[in-house]
Length: 105
Image 1 (spheres, rainbow, N blue to C red):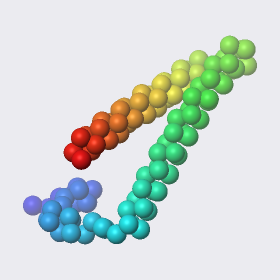
Image 2 (tube, helix red, strand yellow; image 1 turned 135 degrees about the vertical axis):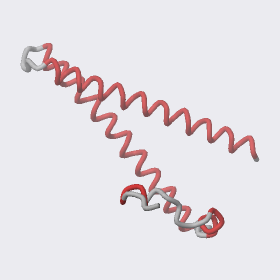
Image 3 (tube, helix red, strand yellow; image 1 turned 180 degrees about the vertical axis):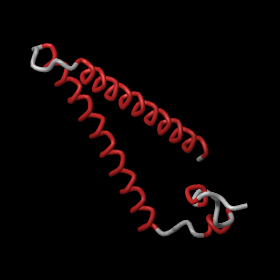
């Protein structure tokens, strides 16, 4: 059976043991992964903060009568609220994972 192009990339190409054997075990690779994850988290938090500020600014402009589009204000508020919710969920999952790891030791 042939899969569409997008689905082909989702199918496993290697066995689990081959994937496990290819995971880097040296400290430099682990350090790079940690640094990349830290950069990703920092950038994501910056985006959430930017959306919060954007929503506040649009609300201020709307209250001052400088913009008339209430839809734009509402969308900005919803984006900011969703970003904050997702950030909270990720934070809770990270704390949960840390607690599980600390219990394993």
